[in-house]
Figure (cartoon, rainbow, N blue to C red):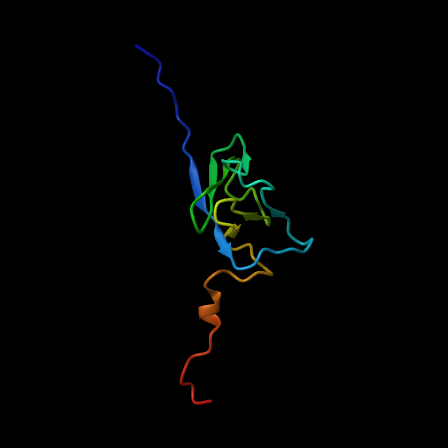
Length: 109
């Protein structure tokens, strides 16, 4: 009988899109200099793949863990969306927050 191979499972995490890329020194912003290049921004030996929250482009292949990017903002080379891990944002608003923050119409004011 032949030997069976064990295939490790891959975790795919869709990142959260934020409205503006943070340009301060407080958070690293990772973007590709030449968008003519293809493929992920990073390759690693792990089992976590991180995809763009807007277009689902593969940003990181093989991160050691889904939380590996910590507070970095990844700019998608495909759609230019600014991505972060969910729950990380301190300074930038998430896309869609503008609807939540809009005042209700007809409030009598």
